[in-house]
Length: 170
Image 1 (tube, rainbow, N blue to C red):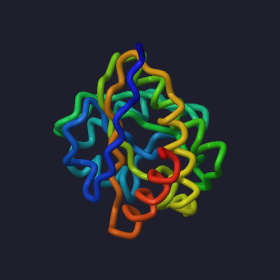
Image 2 (image 1 turned 135 degrees about the horizontal axis):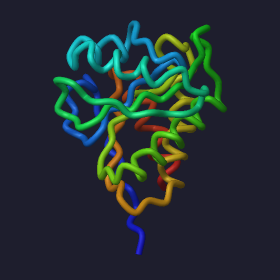
Image 3 (image 1 turned 120 degrees about the vertical axis):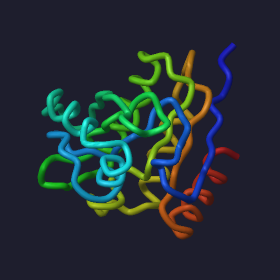
């Protein structure tokens, strides 16, 4: 019998996560600039970016895994939520979220930590992002994944995700 994936909402720094994988909101060429990507590279090391770039470019909406360097996680999963124009949309976020969940399944991971994909550099509205990402997790059928964490930067983002989560999971 499939168990429902446990969703945790956390306000804070995704680089402190102890999940099997941390998700990077990436561009499809996989170079790591500012925002979440910059923080992951700063804490985890340049090896993460070097390995990612060697695997790219990848289609927007897809995901690849790399080492996690100095992070506590086993992997960094790079979700291509935008092109090099740094623009995103609902379809890219939905497909990238689904790609991450499928890759977690393939790697037999039990936990993953996501940022709010596309809401930083990509400028996507956080409420719409929350609806898309939480819906994808709630509808995902998994044999391995038990826990999904959303690391949200700031109280406003946390509150919005929390409201959407309550609405979608009731």
